[in-house]
Image (cartoon, rainbow, N blue to C red; front, side, top):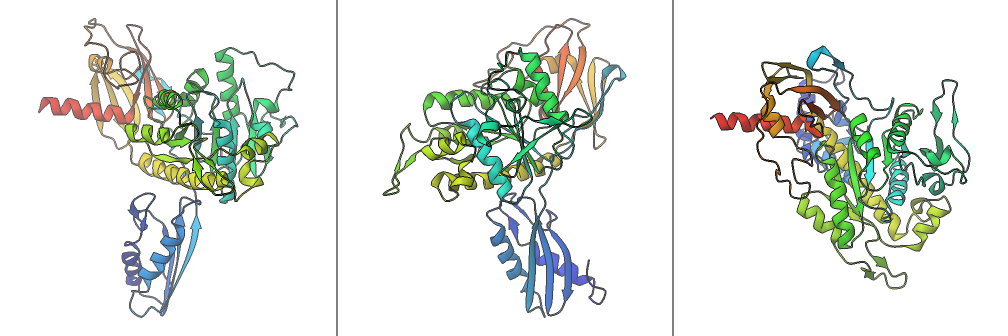
Length: 471
């Protein structure tokens, strides 16, 4: 608000000028994004705060300079003071829904106090995914954000080693696990609960339950980002995660070789049916930098990560060079961004971190605009949805079944439908409808098919297709 002795119109004048300044991360002006706060006008001085959603933004000084320039264009203003602040945006919470039969489905919950859950995944092992996750977490902390890392690789936990932790995690009086902090990052890992001599021989459902315990039974506290280091591949743990919590997004780690890129593509497609935003691809071991002449040598091929990002329309977040010190520092419990902050790998990590943080802010902004259902009911052979804005949709059971997006019905590589239109029984219906995160529902049909996960965005698109076919 303005000072009492200033005309109220002055605030709008200030906002009009600031609306010419854009946040390149989101592609919108800072006024419509709600960044401009605490405007004060006392001619010839104008003062305001600009609150960004990305503490790692590489454009923050540019935004500040453009804001000052714009404000100095106001009449009778000779001095413009702009204070840059930041507040990391949070991904949307899940929505409680009424399902067929009157059952109320609780809204999927993020861990208490956690704003964003960011999965780091790979299609195969050996690409340095855990190293990337560790350095990404520390680099985010170095921007001023509060960060935690959940080591979800139950069978091969490594984050304890990478952060130099040798003690066991403890629990509070309510048996909630207390994460251990190292280099400013709060960490929880199976490696902090077992010893080196304790083998982890668990079946998939047991591992999935542990991940749920790590999400709901750990005292994470207030976190801007919780990095989840997933096990390699696509299995029970990954599926449990995508169904249990509203993920903000995922990043895929690969190496330049064609075989690694091909497998990374499969890992990437794991997130598409459940509409978890894939924020981008990171190419690890991208090149080698000579310490004498700074020449780059592409040892394992060149440009694999960029090619797949272009083919699939996914942002390329950057490449990380090969450096023996990255491995050595991880083995000794001190990530490279801490041990050698000026090393080429550390510079690359910070640049990638800024892009990841920008992608999170962008995903949150876009998610806020996506409508979500608040009631789902079944009647007259249709699945009926009342959306958060009180609009309604109705999908015939047969149409939904024949538009199932699962890998059985749709080729996971080409995206083309594999199954023909099915002739369904007259009494065909959904047996259950379960929420998946805060972005989809999973339907079990009376013909036994239950692998289809229908995203809210996909349902809206299907509704538009049905309306267009009637026109």
